[in-house]
Length: 95
Length: 490
Image 1 (tube, one colour):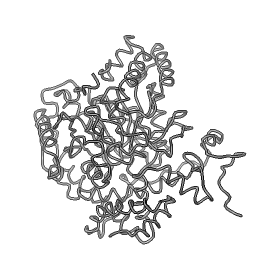
Image 2 (cartoon, each protein chain N blue to C red):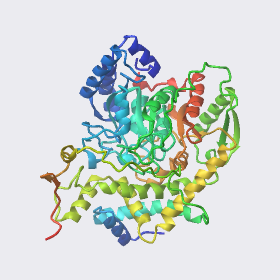
Image 3 (cartoon, each protein chain N blue to C red):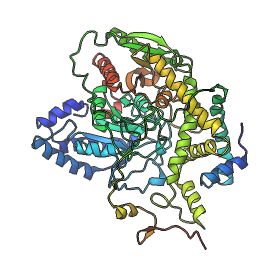
Image 4 (cartoon, rainbow over the protein chains, first blue to last red):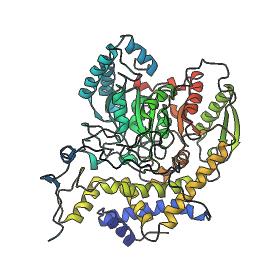
């Protein structure tokens, strides 16, 4: 397979990463090299093989439904780019 | 003191031959003198270290010292440290002072260990050479024109140059074992789930695992013992009793201490692609193991060559999800100019992430996108199953698997940095171990051309860390590769 420049732009949009025209072209070449490596997978017949998502096939633990985290809002918001009155500020979304 | 083992440092501290403050100062001064040539550290925390050391001295004086109380160490900059910069090697987090400690960091603090600072790494642990760091590449102490390996290159270089006795690292596809091999130190990645991932900035969550660097297996065993253990805050942390990974090491040295140990040699790890100088050192080390009583048996990992393609689907897929949290809203870099929310996201991420991180996010986004999931992510997870089954079949015929850690010794800075695929292929022997979730260790086993270190990798069954460490320890009792130091560190 070979990604087109349009496909690279589409993926970048999905990933929320701005790419200039020059970056998109350079990225396309590198990505196609990586996909050339990945394509080796397709030659293997994996019919009937159960996908493995975790080395130990353990069940997710449940814990009692009680609050375990203290309120540390100030400490967490101190490192945010922009906050006001305990809220994170972002550009206006709704006009 | 610079070359002392943790056991020797413990004895010196307990006997009052040196204080923790003096020991920390000794290593901090070495960092100040040698690190400009190595760039192994992103942050050196002299004031914090001396304060911790004073508290350690008080504990020692009160007879309340544990095995690591007063021992200097360094953390890979992937571990969150409260009040200390945690960059993950990225511009995205260049201003991030963590409001909390990673579980590993809090365990080592409670043990009284003295963190001297945070070590350099490939951005978000993505890389095999440390060249992907926003803070510039770390250098190999054996030849500063060469890479130390990655992604935990700073920790490996720091231990190799004795800027610190031991250091933490993480290993998603070889990021502890490969830099350990290329810098001539010992490094262990335990079984997936043994070390908590809480506060360890996520790359590929089903593969990420914390690990330890030291000059010897004995030092790694002590550090790992303090780092490991169940943590309810990590959903994949394994609930099992705590282990003393040093427990087999105290047995007295014997002529044939490894009698009965069957070492499997996968033919796929000894084929073309391994450099001649690496092969010679590895073969000689295997002779060493046989002299200690071990036997070797040929085994096969028939799907081993699929590990790299499967990894470069699974890891980027998980990374694209994990790194979506870096959006310029709650922490990290935010672009200065943007018209709307969408542009704030895309510009902040474009400016904050480096080229390799962007590539992996894009690969992951593509393989998870509509219509491609089955062909890529699901197929890779099926191959992962086959690879894990290969290891189980091989381990039915042997106790541990051995081979080279890296196909070559350390390469020149810049040699592979423009070719991601060549860089990816350098992890050919380590990646399959992460996919299977097994423990792996690398220890120095000789030198190749240009006096560059070669590492031997040992892989064992789930939870066999103590056995791997014991095997390496017996080898190190009978050899001195792990005692060699680069000229720069003298």
